[in-house]
Amino acid sequence: MKHLWLLMALVGAVAAPSWAQDAIYRCGNEYTNTKPDARSSKGCKLVEDGNVTVVQGTAVPKSSTPKPNADSVSKMPRVDTAQQKARDSDMRRILQEELNNAQARLEELKREYKNGEPDKLGPETRNYQKYLDRVAELKASLARTESDIAGIRREIDRLPAAARPQ
Image 1 (cartoon, rainbow, N blue to C red):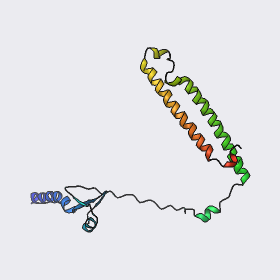
Image 2: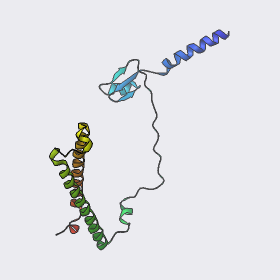
Image 3: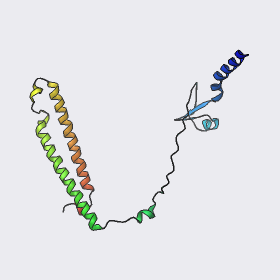
């Protein structure tokens, strides 16, 4: 009797997955097991011997804070124009200082780079790979500094016209 129950439990365990899965259809990037969905959309194909695992996504928690609408945004305190102009001029001054520093760094890198042929330092005379590595680092620093300068110029161009020099 024990063997019969054990045999039935084993057969049930093996057969259960086949009972649980119906035919699965792939429609583009979507998988479905309902025939009307598969028939209505073109390009659906039956997945043969496909074990598809369905993972339920986590629900996005509802926030307790309300989202601001246009009315609440208009009720926020505004900065007076004199204070905003002062902020803009400070921002322009800071950006101009950064631009000057970046341009000085670029000139220094260009002098050191010497158009792709910088001077060899002490250990680089014996080890050419060190020299090539330093040249590659200099080239990357040049490109990065030029990119920084372009970004600072874009930021300066975004400033209001009143903050720009006349």
